Length: 78
Image (cartoon, rainbow, N blue to C red; front, side, top):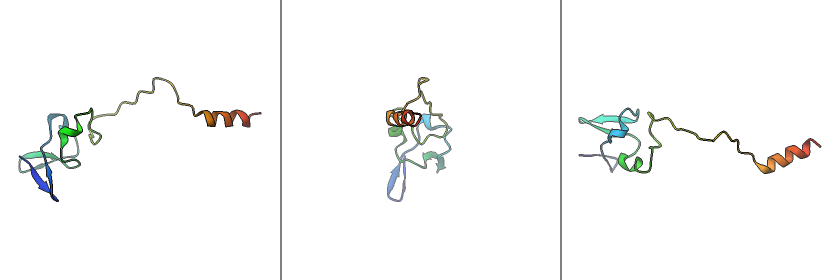
């Protein structure tokens, strides 16, 4: 079951989409208001439109330093 919006066929959401603020209910089925194929968005990990999933940033405790800026800072201190 799917519905068409502006010529684009939208497919129902999958269970990973439950709780997302971007879902809307049409004729008893829930659809994503941002992307027509929700299962494809979840196939490579977390959907980037998901509002119910927090993105985890893993910097590993290290700060990236731009070597060009570091050399300019060192030269300024001379």
